[in-house]
Every structure is written in structure tokens, then in C-alpha cells.
Amino acid sequence: EFFFVTTGAQLLHFPASLVRPQGRNAGGMAGIALSGNDKVCYFEALTPGKNTIVATIASSSVALPGTSGSLKLSALSEFPGKGRATGGVRCQKFLKGEDEIAVAWVGNTPMRAGAANGAPIECDLPLSKRDASGVALPGPIAGFAGPR
Image 1 (cartoon, helix red, strand yellow):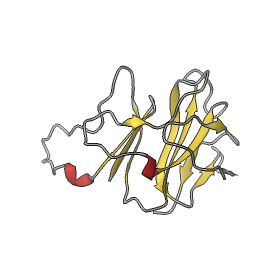
Image 2 (tube, one colour; image 1 turned 30 degrees about the vertical axis):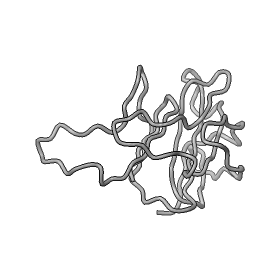
Image 3 (cartoon, one colour; image 1 turned 45 degrees about the vertical axis):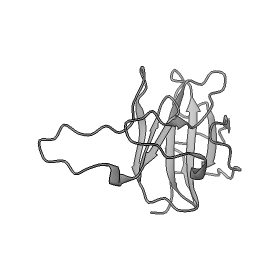
């Protein structure tokens, strides 16, 4: 499946089989429909499993990266699949002072989080509903990783 997450907190996933092969001179294909100033902040091609999760960090677009924000973990099963070229579904509710998804990840557990210097950050949070808000960051998370 293909997974898109936008800075405006929209997640879209659909089967890769919906994308037809394109030739060398192709103009591309529509993935997710964006509105306003929304941008794609995460894309992944992944075969989801029963333990696939979605991790998102909401933050302020004017804050220094990793200095503030909230983290949310949800089971992929909370997110209905939609067709390509649609807007997706909300993946995190913004709290006061938050206006963008700064970091996102979709993958199979176990998930690991890390700081910019590579130090591990413990993220043992319970899974939340699809469009819930997050909890305070346990540290300045720069990214996530999991098994392939």
C-alpha cells in the first residue's frame, strides 16, 4: 500500500495496485489531494501487518524543530482506506499552539524513536483513536524506525 501524511494532519492510504505503470515521459500520477498550503510530509510504500501503527508529531510551524509538540500513536486499523487522489482522513487533532504535523511515520512494530544525535527516545504510549490529540513529547524526536 501507499501511505501519505500531510502537514495539515491528513492520512491517505490505498493499494499500490491502483497505480498503473507509467512510461519515461509520463507526467506522474495523483496521490493525495492537497488543500490550501498543505504539503506532504511523509510517504511510504509498505505491506501493512496486523501490528502496523501510525506515529505523528504535531508542532508549531514557527517553533524550532523538536522543541515543542505532541506525539500520538494509533493502530493503522483506525484509518479507513480511500481511493487515490482524495483528501484522506484526519490523523491528529491539533492542540493550542500546534498547526502542522512535523514528523510522521507508518510502519510495523516494534517502533523505535530517536533524537537528531541518534540517541533512543522511549515512546511506550498507549494507542489512541484516529483523530485524537497527542501527548507531550518524551524528548526531541527527529524520526522513527521499525522492522522492514
